[in-house]
Picture 1 (cartoon, rainbow, N blue to C red):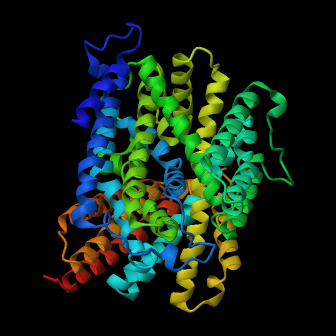
Picture 2: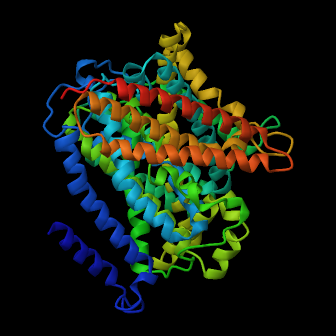
Picture 3: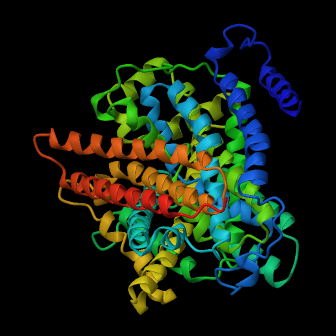
Length: 587
């Protein structure tokens, strides 16, 4: 009944348009219609499927066992945290630029396949995966999924798993630092609104943790300050900052160095000083931004100008299977989310009763972001402009630009008082905010994983917080340096990111499946998704390898990592299957 009432309310909401866009005929041609359907499915998935998992499979709803944040509190990483603050941290950490970039690129196959995979993937795979990783990590004293793999699968899989995590996080740090730096350079009006968050977040953290004050009102005041700065910066050149070139380094490269230096500092600080309050404030900002995009779609009710299914994508896009799933990646399911869940969130969660809204609910939020990105590029342009972007493959190579432009067009059309410059600044700030919080968390995850590797290999310097932080923050610079043709290393190997990300998700589900068998629980909830993702990952890597081998000159920066990942995937899957067979069945 609740779902039916929600459907009626949402249908009524999108119908309020003044009659210029009729909803009674050809509703399927408009973006708002599909958003309503997707949102209702998300609500039903959270209400019934997540509820079933919480009661019958993971048994978290009634678990009052003290969590590691309580029993192992150290004031740095293990900190019991208010569920709303932790939800803000977790959501903003997982919802980076990847679901925007991947989804916008995947629309080359048409918007319908993207929407279907996002909705099904989030409800049945992605949200379940994040929730499962969080609960499992909490029940293993807040250990990372790689460390848990060692306890359940063996020492060799632990090392392979941790190496995969370090490589993936290394790539994420380089990519997100470059994306933020590029956006800063292209949108000087976004610099002040983003950086003003830092002193504001420090003040909010001090007020909440040291002065024991409330956090909601200060965070709302901070939200007002930041959004006010967005409008002022967009319309006042004196508030806009353009980074100059320094000592032969381009402005983008200077920004990258500063962003990684900032990550080094935040990586060492206790989570309550900056990470938690900034992510909590950012979550409000991102919810407002995401809400503005949805409201713009419901008000403007744009027609879907992109093809529902594109049977002739450009060669650069590759085949729809498996590359649709690999390209969308974080918009439907992401192995990186398991790193956030087990790397930082599991060390801060106060009660396992909070695991469902934080783990499953946050992924629903990311699915909403992926849907917004889909509709921005599918309905934010004229048909001619869409084909000009996608038929040439430009939007596949650089999808962030189409998302920013398409979303700005939607905001400008829906809200007559917003100029195109203000709209572009708003979108740039939203994207940078998503990416920046992921950058902070990824660096901390890398430091923690390096510490686990140090203990496994008996390399004591890696267990040192300062040494591990420096390695985590500054080694990505090697991936950012541009070669003679002006292309940086991370851009060359980025095609393997989707596959490595899906691989990590598949392996995480495999570890969870072994854990569930030891607990005597049904296995198909995690086992079937693990098999499907393993098939997608292996197919994706084989597709990349074949594409490189058929080129006149293979790009070794893509071929070698793809081949190594394929071998790594097969090795860990074999170890996991063996462990699954060995696992005792309590029944």
